Length: 52
Image (tube, rainbow, N blue to C red; front, side):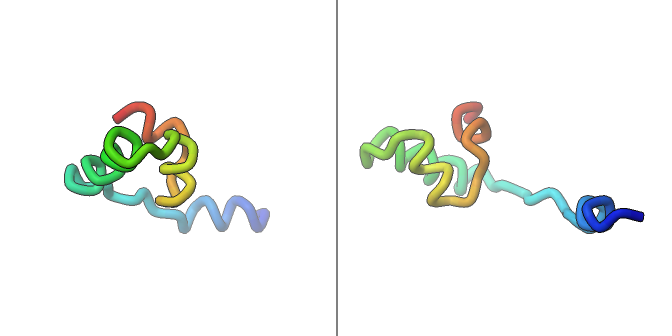
């Protein structure tokens, strides 16, 4: 088994709460962050924040 396969097998999906989503959206809507800046500061992929 390749190292990358082992890594992918052990990764778990992170659960994002509605409160976290609201606070993340607030960075963009209320505090002037771009969606890219907000996503990076929260450790998210950029497309996740756009979907919310």
